[in-house]
Image 1: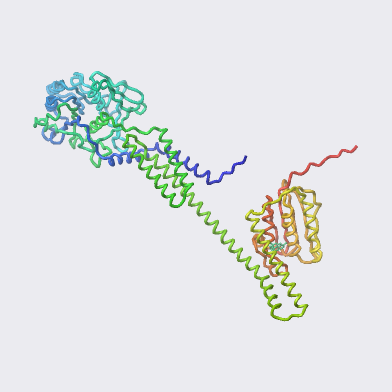
Image 2 (image 1 turned 180 degrees about the vertical axis):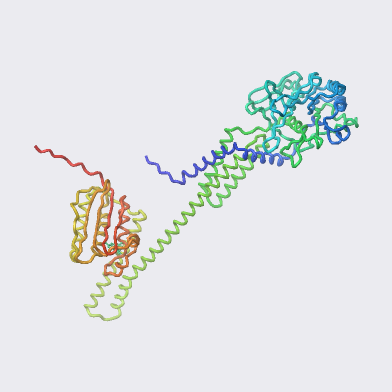
Amino acid sequence: MKIRFDRAQLYYPSVAVFCALASLALGWSSYAGRFNGSFYDFYFRRRGPQPPLEDIVLVTIDDETLARYGALPLDRAVLAQGVRAIEEAGPRLLALDLLLSEVSSSPSDSALQEALAGSAPVVLATALEASETGKWLHPLPIFAGNGAAIGHVHADPDSDGVSRRVLLEKRSGRERRWALALECARLWLGAAQEPVTEADEALEIPRSRDSGNVLQVFSTRTNGRALLINYAGGNGMFAQIGFASLLNRPELRQQLAGKMVLLGVTAQGAGDRLFTPFSAGIGMPGVEIHANVLHTLLTGKYLRPAGDLEVALAVLGIAAVAAWILARFYGLPLVILLAGLGALVLGVPYQLFLRGQVWPAFSLLLPFGATTLLCGAYQLLLARSQFDESEARRRRSQRQFEMAAHEIRTPLTAIQGSSELLLRYPLDDAKREQMIRLISEESERLGKLVERFLSVERLSAGEIELRRAPLDLSALLVATVERVRPAAESKGIRLVREGAFTETEIEADAELLEFAISNLVTNAVKYSPTGTSVTLALERDGDRALLHVSDTGPGMTAEESRRIFDRFYRTESARSSDAPGFGLGLAIAREIACHHGGDLRVESRPGEGSRFTISLPARAAAKRKNHITH
Ligand code: ADP
């Protein structure tokens, strides 16, 4: 079975697949990453701030603290005072977002050591050295020695400088550290000694308080245990007390009772600030970012990136739907549906974001945009070419209509004139007979004209069905020639066969083909001067039969040779000669040849005659039987 595809039918799905694949491939680019980041940040700002976890209180080494107690790093004796003040308030956890790796004077170090040995569990910060060595900058053993947990405080900003995620795990060499916030969550939820357990898809923090449940933290091993930070809001969302205020206004300390206290630097000059999705010009101090990570962990409102397979399917789906809409609809419904799809592609990811799913905006918008653009452009081109085609068709049929009207007018005028003469004047019998004959001849001519015009129209519209049957072209040619011979002889023109006509079997509609051949022979006779010959030849050229009708008549210019197949076209010399004609015969003959899978051509030169050739597909030559005689 042969299946015919419309090119348009293939175009739309191929564009959809192409756009989907291109979108997926480009989705890995850094440009796509930035684009996704901008949308991600936009979702945060659109959602707005959320109530922060009240259990978190920040004690901030702010500008006022530095103004009072000197530049950073803060003297450890002062730090020790602050830690003691916090401990006195009875917090449930204390985390220091300060690197205590440098050695300082021993009295202040031991003061801090003592302060840290208070009752609340302590989490200290560590970081990897910026240099290649990848050495950990752990707190000095005197500080960490009291069983303090140590968490890393590394930031992991994206290429555009915005911190959207935190790596819960950080390795260097053999040593691995959990993030400071994760350590805080572990100590906050469970007993100090219970470790975090690891699965491929999540980390589990034991909760000793809530009857032994665990807190699942979604962060895959393959993704470096990255956790998207669900920021509660911009700067200053969490409860804060300045370090200096805490020391100088003891009444503030009660706010820390039973809380998780994060101590860190927020002073403007400290430089420890990073951009977040909420940032506008001014970054967020690191300690606040840790608070936001903790907020994410403890509220359990995780943001999970959509899986690769899900994204691939969505991309393909969007491209397919866009292509389908463009292939199927037009006009207002098309605009409405495309706008609807566009709104979904823009709006649904935001709704999913609110439900904790993060979709890459670039990979969703690109297939929609690219498919719409490519299919739309194709549609525009298609519509344009269809419009041009129908315009050309309209102009052609208008021209033909005018020509037909013109051709009809001549016999009609003759009929009208003669009948008026008959009606108005008493004419003698001879004159009357002449008039009546004229009327009859002209109406016959008119009838023929209409009939021919209709047949060429029907043929070109494919309305005439061929009654094909196997036939011998040589026999058909001989029969046609014999029919034209009397007319040729009366004009003194010889019909000559060139070579013998060998039997040539073809599949054809005998009646139509005879019309085409006789038109060629009649024309040759009609336009050739008396005393010349018209030559007929039949030959085989591979799987085609060629039938030539040659004359030594007036011939035609190249332009005329091209136009004689147009309806109603007659050459100047034909029009000025006595030869009757409508200029329709060759148009019909060519249609007939084409409908048989062949064609009709002419070679001609002015003054040298013309050679018309009909070529037709021939059936395989019948095998000759070899008679062996003894
Ligand atoms: P008609 O002969 O009725 O005018 P055709 O369609 O058969 O219409 O031919 C179209 C025109 O082609 C003729 O009017 C004539 O100008 C030109 N033509 C056709 N055959 C010949 C020929 N053998 N020699 C010269 N001109 C020809």
